[in-house]
Length: 611
Image (tube, rainbow, N blue to C red; front, top):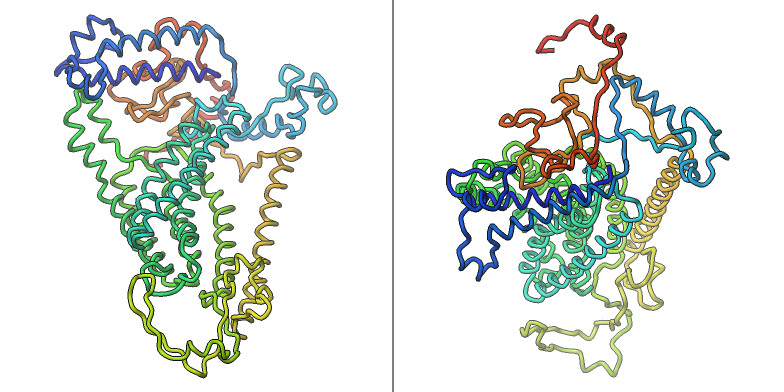
């Protein structure tokens, strides 16, 4: 049901009640069914005046007023009426599911022209049409625990606007991070690396906040993939690209602290130590369990601090891809990065293993969206970047923008012969000697990004050539190899887009894998159904928003031992009296299998507990 505003209103009411529980006196409980002002004031402590003055703290009466307003708003939203947006069907057998998906499939172009004139494409009164004339968009649903029920009703146009807005905000944050790295690099390479490490710690939280607040996704896997894309771009730019941009080309190689090699070394050192250390010691988790939890007023609120840290698959993938990207980006000028990368991977493996077993809490089903995106897109990008940077750096060596003319020193420049003392950019005295047999040098561009692509010896300016013969041969080979790799990558990308468009319009999107299982749905130990819910960090258990009294407890993939089924305590539809009768919530029910099916099942041998 398309009732997103109503559910958010009820959720906001629950959150206010949750905040009210912080004011409870010792030994008192909040009765959600009796929120009269007199009863609540008797069980809650008053807010000190100094908190109201210094922190603008709200008192109990303010929260009660908000609750009354939200209840009235929920009743008005329930009266507006709702429409069905999605229908989820679970079959008793996998064979039935495949038969229905195969029979009710129509190519995408028939769905596009459905509202205009479907008679041209599908005969009228076709049994496959809904009510004899409508084409239904039938697809295989994701796992029940991965559905984001509040976002399922959002339209494609709204999602495009949300997508543009979120990425504009992300690019603005990338620019701000680049400015911070630039300002820090003016002091020292280690300080710039420290700023980069701090930004990399903040980035996943910012990406998660932006994605959750702005974008809407039908599945948790798609949300995690969106977070992964934003975080990866953010870290790639601030970890590797910004350092290369703000560092002068002539400072690419050298042992000074303001040159690329020193900067990359400090970046690797901080990335090798900071993230695994912070994950392992779990500072915020200890603060929650040992400082905040004992101060809570109820057992339920205290238990919230013992649920474990949130596991983000997007963050773990991003950490791996950041190290790989940094390694290949500077692989030519800093080949030691491969050893740092291997050490970082090993350390992160054991730290992640420890966190999965000891720290992380329960999470929603994610699926393979991130894995497919990473394999098909980001690894291809890294391979292309590796080829380009290898070709560019090998051709640009020795990175000094100086070319030997092989001409003897001219008469007007004879005064330069001898020993000279000068002050460098660090205010230190330096000595240089110029011999009579020396030749003249001239300025020339060695940055191949400015000279053009591909990065081959022919890009050198006339009479300003700096490559030796062996370097030209290798640059020629690497340059055209990078061109071939770019062409292959672009072809694969265009092929993927074309195949995706073609299959969505003219071919079946559902392709069964393997033979259908003969096991019935209700025989599975965890036969979870499509029960609408919303997960929030302020509550230990998911909040339902549909009537589940018509289904068995096995369809819900969690249980609360302290509350009898059907968990009315965790159901939003009962929060405001009178809402259930207005049909403003999703409906879920089951149909018993036919007698023939039951008879066939009863003849099967029963499985033992071990089996």
